Image 1 (cartoon, one colour):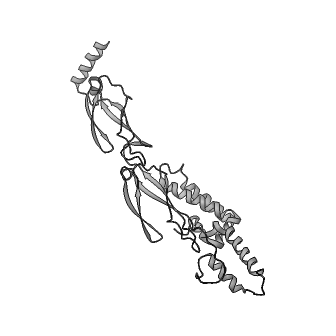
Image 2: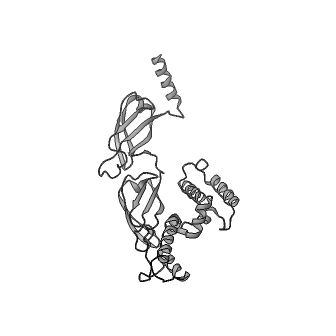
Amino acid sequence: MAFIDYYKILGIPKTASESDIKKAYRKLARKYHPDLNPNDKVAEAKFKEINEANEVLSDADNRKKYDQYGEHWQHAEEYEKAKQQEQYHRQYQGDSERYSEEDFSEFFENMFGGASAGSHGRQVKFRGQDFNATLQLNLNDVYTTHKRTLTVNNKNIRITIPAGVENGQIIKIKGHGGQGINGGPNGDLYIQFVIENHSKFKRDKDDLYVTVDLDLYKALLGGELMVDTFNGKVKLNIKPETQSGTKVKLKGKGFPKYRKEGQFGDLIITYQIKLPTKLSEKEKALLNQLQNLRA
């Protein structure tokens, strides 16, 4: 996780040509494109990785930096600038001291954190690399606040996942990214949530939507009906002559509101009248009588 191997993501060697990169990207982009993988969050995350790898490797300058500096490639300009400043400092400090290539290499290693704290030369501090991770959860998992342990760079991180986290939402865990260089601050960890919904409820932020079947007789005559909410059942009173498509809102029976403890959205129920099938002869006769009365 500390180092994202863009070559591995695209399935190509480091010697790949610009044409090879383009072909590999197009092949994988077609395979994992969201239009061909609707509602597939794993494919969506893979598609983002492929695009990120292509953006870096298809740009000659970025690829050169990536090949040379690896996980620190985004700091390449800072490293080069610091290297030039140190070289200038050593050449013009007013005495006849001369530094060998080995001395200079030691300074360069020092910038990457490789040299000891007691080595000569000025240390340049750099902030550690930010890490990005994807955490897959089910909708049930984010209905209540809970703790979960993640393993990042062989270290266990205990995080609290607040109820009401949304699909695609990103949260930042400060200081749990890459280690800072030469005493610089650590980077941060960014976690993107991929929330799969296998329930019968459709979620829109903190509101839930569900369609409930209503038999013809109860729709015409009214009565009581037990319906499911996300965390239990409730009894509803059905008004006589309820029409198909009628919507009922249950306040506070939706999804938890993010970081608003004890507050919930609404549950919106849509009634769908279900017509009876396999009618008996007696039922048909009674319906004919009803039809004649209505006429």
